[in-house]
Image 1 (tube, rainbow, N blue to C red):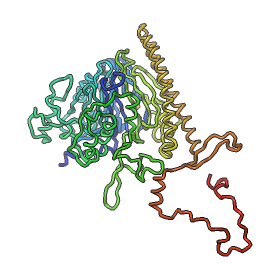
Image 2 (tube, rainbow, N blue to C red):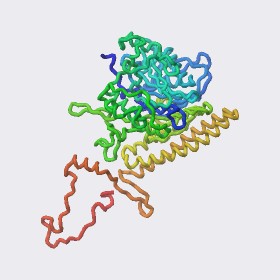
Image 3 (cartoon, helix red, strand yellow):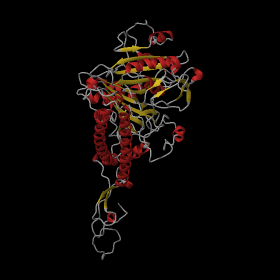
Image 4 (spheres, one colour):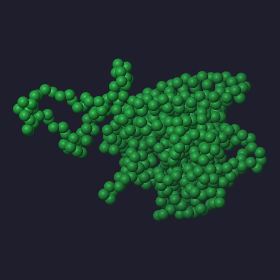
Length: 596
């Protein structure tokens, strides 16, 4: 029984993330897309970078844990490594992930070279991006790396796609605990015309026979290891073998907090013939754990990048799981909750919904894998720090070699001491207006407290900035493509880098100004509007207005506590002299400082 206990998915050090994979056949422009929310309240979101390099024999690469920040060991450098910026490389490959947890006894979290496990899931991504050019090649590199240097993490789900082949793959991988070095994994290609999503719960069930490497790849001992350790009682070629049910069986938490996010994505865009949202609602609710959802679905219409951003910002709008209407949403319909995912009352456990677009995202991106362009231009990440819903997104080509300093993380992967050593301002505990993550948080916090009033202004600003950055991208693409065609690769790469730096500068400047606008507009809970005819503040100050539904909640909760009694008729006050006049007085609410 204990070997099937799941490690906590949503607490502790591992990131609880959400991914979306869109094949070229399901994309409006014909190019694959991968979307990624890297969710962690403990990480400062910024862009990590490793330059293209040639390395002498005997050179080594240090490996630091993505989540724990500790050194896990060193591995030999490859003779040549590709440029990596964010989660993309100069060959047109992107890799995203979500932590799945898996069987507790197979976890290697906290182990290092002394245990024969050097590579955690984060460094496995980055080192693979330095060494692989396509999704299928990346899967094989990840297998070779974990076999050689061990795997120091929980179970992970990986999204992989590239601009060279246009293929999109989903991979699930788990270590072997203290039994032996290496990892157990299965990778399936997402069928053309389909989409896929994953969010902290293993989703690959039956996959055997895995005999077509264009559609399925697997570690050779996936089934035999399970048989040897008593996880599966069957034959090595048994088609009933389920990777998820063996290595990460679904629990209430896995369904309600994790798979429900996938349900939300599928519900929003899937063709009803491909996915029946109502039929799988009891699974998303955590009430029927056997009612598993399909791994891949067809969308009812081909998806744009803007739609993928919207999907990664979902809060269960207009569904049974919607958190917008109960008392926890407050007067301005906030989908966020501040008291964790579970809470106790009179001996019973209750839950808050784990939304896709959560407030504690560290960074996020939607990558377009653009075919038919020079490889350094193939992987285009629209990258943002903090909450996907409210942050600006800047375009970063895989061939860019730098970003604006407000987005820069060097090769630190958010380690505070490393950032200080590189002269980078800001981390989770050190505020800086020169940190895009902090500036995005400032804007998002204005929305969290004043959702109905602030959200429309942020959406408008984001749309305007996106349009401006898209126009600049068109110019940069054209200039770089002409340079590549003329044989000036150095000039082309400089154009991509200059564009990345300029986009980051523009986004941070605009979001800093937006925060200031929101602060002024909603200071002290009021609504401030410009009024040049008013000589003192050149403004008007009004109170917020709330919905009738919220007023009804307050009255139901408090009865007549706040009820204003009817005004008495003139002369009706007890003890009032007969000569008392009945002339009206000025309303106290009109006195400056009483109501406004």
